[in-house]
Length: 367
Image 1: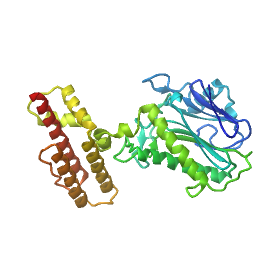
Image 2 (image 1 turned 180 degrees about the vertical axis):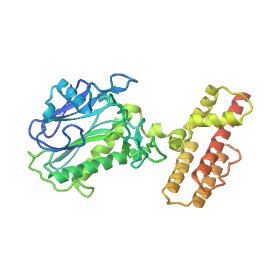
Image 3 (image 1 turned 120 degrees about the horizontal axis):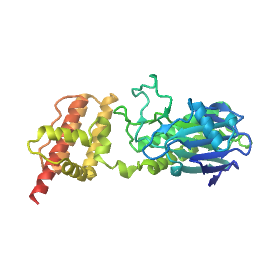
Image 4 (image 1 turned 45 degrees about the horizontal axis):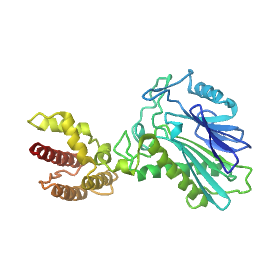
């Protein structure tokens, strides 16, 4: 299926679980692709492939090495493995997002698939990739793959700078969604397996020597990549401002989850309560406007403490004020943060949420 015709004259197709762009003329390409990656001027096509064999199934390599696996995929979709750069992911090509912006004779198009629910992470998070892995599997459950097409001629260094601006735009999208890392308490800056292909058009009469944020090209990269990343994430996993309007999702990266709240509840309650009933009461509170607002503010205080922008004393004072305001909305006594560390703050939030859940359960029992 033909999805789009680019301003460069190249067409974007979707078939065999891939997004494919065959080049009509020579292009300059900078990419993070493992096969035929880096800076190239001899490529004839690029693609993005969904390696997922089915829902809930792991991506399994069809050859002893990833390079050979990608060669098989390249041949399967009718391209030359020697002159094609490809990317792999478990995101569906049906969920691709394509955004285009123009300024005078300059046109930029971002073609994005992705997800960060499973392996979204923050630069500097603890990692274990240095250890041996199973060569027969490809774990790419949340990759954000971007193909960025710039209808202008760029020198190699500026093409690489465009890749940097593209990455910044992706991270900005994740920040605006407050997407959390799955490996630390931080906000995600991407997934652990993100890949990017940037294409320039040497046939264009427009020659640019800047792709940073002060340039119009940099602006257009941001204005295409940022919304395309958001749309792709929404299509793939539902990640959106509406989904993030959740007390539980906001504080999850600090280890407070449905399960942790249930465990604390069972340890501190004398009466036996069925877990589904507890979860029902918790979920009814999850989207409460006040709780979401207080949770968002509370978590940001913890971030400021982690980043050493606020002291423990300052966070304790502001945190106790938030707890008091939240407790007042439910007409109950507020828990108090006694220490100046993150753990003390989390313990107080646990106490607050469980107290609200208990009150809600008691009200339901009286009805």
